[in-house]
Length: 377
Image (cartoon, rainbow, N blue to C red; front, side, top):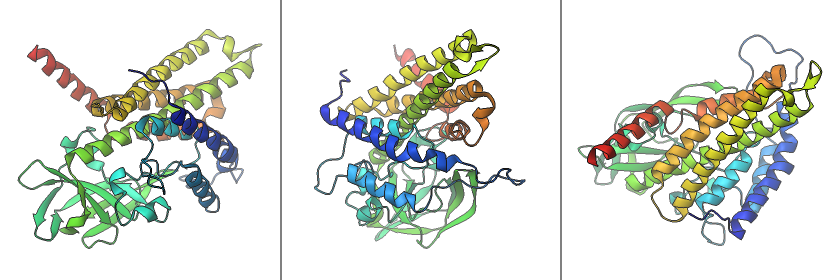
């Protein structure tokens, strides 16, 4: 395995790093700043990016090629590879600002909605709730029935994390077989309804999506098992890349604070317990970095990468959660203050550990696979 970056990958990484530094990190203070001296009782208000700032950031990201990473550009050139995407996601993960490249899978490039999705006129949500538990396609239970002019999705209720989306990408299993179909569903499709919309955290929302005999035209069946599995693995790599960025930010800020914060006559960095925490986090970050880059490299080399992507996501999400916890502990009271990013990273990474494969379920699956290999030997 040769993980030496190409000149193009170096350029993409540097472009993303400069964009994050100049446009996102520079705005982080205004985003995190608490307007009122004391918060009112009850749940804290939602934090959202300024409506006037987002269009500017989207436009600049589009110009730099940092927006719809999986789609070919306007000249028709092939989209950047998995490794370059991971490097971009890692840079965007260094900021708590709710802005990152749009999730538009490559199979939508020929869709009638591709241009509007790439232009941020429409929002797409991956309705993969049944996959989140195991991180595999085995969890898909929704059924569809082929008909002469399309397909009918049977009754189902799932939770989605972007209820404001205009389009939903939904996997379902064909009745009587194990074949999986991947459907693109519009929000106004008859038989589709959204209910129980609520705040998941102060930065994210969720809702219940219900399908009742939903008729889908044949042209909206975009793929089958392999396409669904590829999107799943791509999302796992996206999460792994973002978690690497979160880990880098938490480690760097924790080291800087430990070097400058003095208690009882000496800096935190001179205390052995603090040194151990930072050393452990540094090792975990490096391990997860190589796992993630290896999985992305395998994808670019057309090698099997689904299992590698799942492992990278599982390890990176755990590492990022521990990184946020470490940063909070080292910063003390400042760590849980909403004007610092660490409490936001803590909540975000706790949720990322549950998406596209819960750790306990993925551990069991890996163990079962290991035992089967051992038995065959």
